Image (cartoon, rainbow, N blue to C red):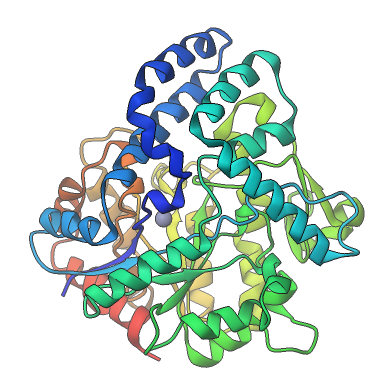
Length: 442
Ligand SMILES: [Zn+2]
């Protein structure tokens, strides 16, 4: 059976409740975008428009309806692997002198989040237009953006647990948790993982998105001061982990944040402990929200917090870890690979990791047509996939990134059609046998 190894069933529960009233705000959004365009923030307007469409989709469907919608596009029953995303700390600035009293810090963060969440979307929109004119400081803008995606940890667990019960044979969700939340739970982050992930539990794997503000070698994940770490547990039980592996996507938007563990240090071209580069380990970023360049902002954080060399360090310690480097570097990096553009590196480094470590996978989700080429999928097949040695081909996974793919004007039905045509018989391999091994074999 077809397996889509990477999709999302984000519902309105991921978003602030008042976003469900968005339809009434169309006019306002349009008005708002005009002055914004004048101050030269076309990208922000574009982001607003894309986000709006994305939000619109999300607020209309339940997870079960999302599955059904996908099934219509695929034309057959299939296995969906919806990935959760823990946004708890994505937009909250840590205090400069972390972390004498983690618990009170966490409490104060929660209070701010709660307060901001309740302000709702109309405030958010007013704030957005105001902030463009008045150039509010970075922290305020960060909090303002948090009003779109709320801290929905529990809601996502509920959504995905419910849909898993409805279609136990067809839906296999991946759990997600931010390792910085260790003190929030009696049994820590690993306790949450043990509670939710397993063969007889609602979740089958783990999703990590480190550009939300932590390192792949965060102590809770990597080396938990003598206690069992997340990777140790996952390696031992062969729990599959999917990590975002692209320079596009999503990140926190703070101008600085405290990072425990390694960061990528470009001048040395390697992963080094954050305090070796930054005073007290507080990473300071160059591309911040005031510059309104989201692609640069996101790419910088994805590089510093998620470079494949940091993952290599993880894999050296846990060489049997079952890990999917999702997106194969992302569409822009893949197109650099195809064009032999020497500024591309990501896809190549993923291939290196797959060569060196037997349980490293990659997926081809959200593979949109970056250069608007008529035969881009055929080119991906011929130049990226086909030359790979057999043992690496057997770890490439099909995924759609539904419904993120809709941010790139790509219809799911066309998407799978392109794959089926370009990959021919190999499509069964990437969409059935490979994901079966990744998700179900232990
Ligand atoms: Zn995704």
